[in-house]
Image (cartoon, rainbow, N blue to C red):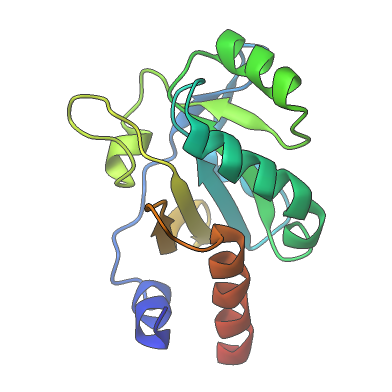
Length: 165
């Protein structure tokens, strides 16, 4: 990743996102902006449908690294399956992070992780909240065949962000 890429997003050149209403595993609606908690950054793991081996690998990897990541940012996963399916899935995988459903929203498509046909892609977005609840994209990483760990990408991005402050 190049520093210019992170700087570009930090400067606000990327338009803000809407405050999407996602669904938690109880069926309740949650605003994207609320997922930050008290953190400046939010790491969103974009997962595919339940049976996706790529999402399994990424989710398992991030589950193992979540405590380190949560020192830098709030963390969650978002996928296209309904909340009930995702709750079962999280329990089966033993993931210890929150998973939200974007079903019925344009969240995945707007962030570039879902096609017009609804095909989802795994990857990661690092978001920041500025000026009240305006959510901006800092950087993103798409899961590609043969790529090394996305956790490494995220940690490298935080190293760059820390140096820029």
